[in-house]
Image 1 (cartoon, one colour):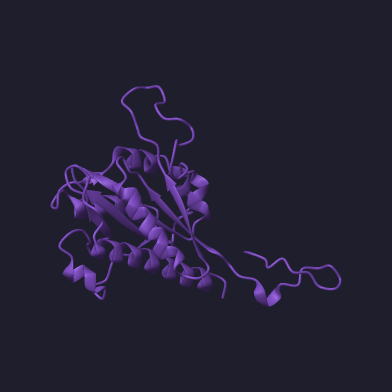
Image 2: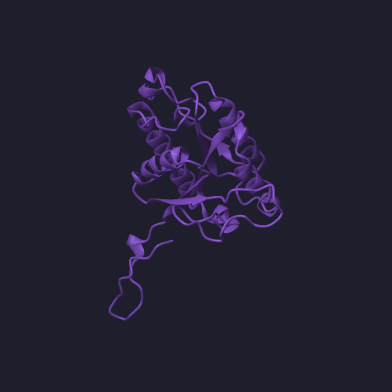
Length: 222
């Protein structure tokens, strides 16, 4: 809960009417070449288009076949690495990964395999979530990758959101964008820019997630 910081004549906080609950949405992604990161930023933009909502961008480190740690404790650039406390703090979650043979990337799977304590404590249960992805080819497994990311969220008891066909771009897109979540067709060399339809759908998904989280959070305080 945020306080306005004002004080009354007796020195006590005099916010009262101005108190509000900030709704924090975790936008968690893995991005090897930047395409999924760009989608994450668009979803964050959609989240923050809702007054009172804040997007917290986080990523996961790459995994290696060697036993020794292969990544620095702090990323060289981009979003910080996620911590389990981020899952506790958030009111909603947008989860993104590039496809790896129709599945989420190993780095993201590795992170979720380590969330047993969060699961046992039900710290994501009842919170809304959504998913997003990018692929090198148009039929490179976008929908199966989105579905693979839904599985751990379902086990955590989250409420999954997609993109409704009331979003006109979903019917008109000739690139990425699915009812299961936002997506981007990056091309084999990753050079394809995010299209207007992909951008519109990613922002719409972020906004829908934020509005849903805000309503659920508000209902919890009624």
